[in-house]
Length: 284
Image (cartoon, rainbow, N blue to C red; front, top):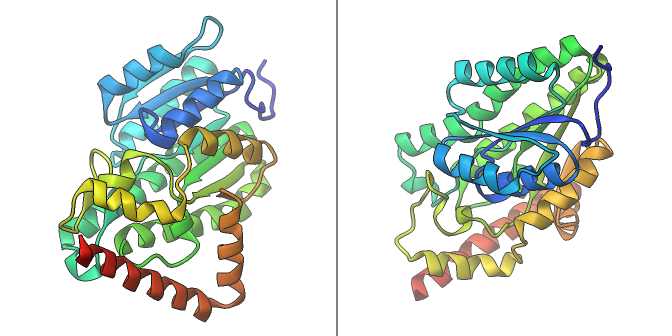
């Protein structure tokens, strides 16, 4: 008989979307290290299978599934197949996403649809698939990956910021509802992380500025990017404590707090950063 409570990683079952690279890969590895069985779901099927082979151990299984999070039916099948095989689902990490840098005027309708369909609708599809199952079993933890750009304004990446703000709103609202069913919800809001998204938006993302990836990376250095493994380790500690909004690294909490206390000051800093960024781009 299955126990009716969440397992804090050891012996738990977790699905990680976008788990083949970046933060997702680091989350999958950190979960395995804690004794959690992981299903890596990623549009890059071959890479997902390679990662699964690399991080699996003699005692912890890792599975790979090629999956597009924009396909809600595929998401539902993944969750149903996982529960049918294991009898439970402890964690749903809705982590898959892309980056897209560029001024608002450079965003086409296709760009908007792409960023929203992956970074927001992909998360919604994960919730649609996992939440009913968790409600029925009486436990579970949904962790949605947003960004620091989901809780403060970030000019120069307006489509990305829009989607991530929506993910934060979804997560906070769902958390309030889910508590009544014994289900936990957290949202991960990291600052700049050293993943392919920084340079070019990742394999499926875009940078709309006409500059090199090296130049984009140099601009990100002022935001002190951190390693995805560090994000994963700190995220799991916060998830174990059922933290609602997980901001990593901690110095970004100061920026977030300042914006909450004075939104106009936060907007002013955002505008200043945008102007400085364009000056740097013009010099490149």
